[in-house]
Image 1 (spheres, rainbow, N blue to C red):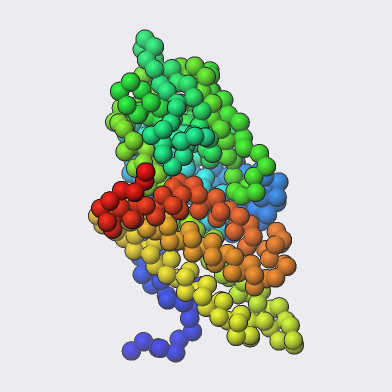
Image 2 (image 1 turned 90 degrees about the vertical axis):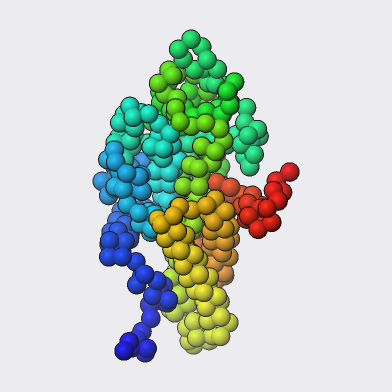
Length: 392
């Protein structure tokens, strides 16, 4: 008979860890050790300076975290739950690290793996899995965000080549990328292209004065008569369904990742309220403080269980887009609420970079918007419920 009086770990009050396989738990633990040892010590300084430590790409590759859910070509071939756990541990340090891994694996490597030729896969995937080449994903434009079908970037045939013209905006990794996956309109519909960033006519400009995701590179991609050969077109990428499938891969990582940010906020608030004394006792002893901590813990555990459930569904039968939207819609919103509530428990100390909470809150404001706004995911779930699309 199990000991019902056994102590429960505050960050795993429901013993969700017991639902993981030995391999999944080992991957989680190894990523957590790496993140706390290599990424955590300098993250406040990177956030304040607005810099990203590009050099970590090799160590992330050595750990097998880049394209870790893909099979072959130097990729680890791990299951979706393992990928999600890695995202959670990386975002527990900062959303910028999870964004880097998500973009590299799900938005840059996945379209090559899914829609590329064998030559393209052999050329790019091993280098990207090792962190020797960094990728980015060019879909969003200044006037085409939630409605990517309205993009203006074009690709036109010129003899044996394609000539790309246009620009992409809010592109993570853009300024440090070696290769960009660019989506453009052609006479035959939307197509995807592998664009090495040293191609003449291709340039980038980093977005400045960000107040969110500061420890991440966000850029504009500019293509001015950028000529690439037919061999760099993704042969099996046809129509808008292709880039949207890539986004769903990355959104799955977000569902897990934001629970890492939420966990960091929770554990910080729990530790702080246990040591901060007012009226001659820790503020954790007050009923209103405990109520807030309980509300945070409840939503943190519910969101983590949701992520785990969706991971099991993805591994067993594939994850329908509406389920992905359900997860992102709920978990990002709840993570933001957790961050705001935890910040309040720290009082004025909560606004400094000495603690991670406001940094997480600022980052989550971007995550709330990117890879499908909260409103768009609401409409996707609404269509699944009613059968009626309400986007226009």
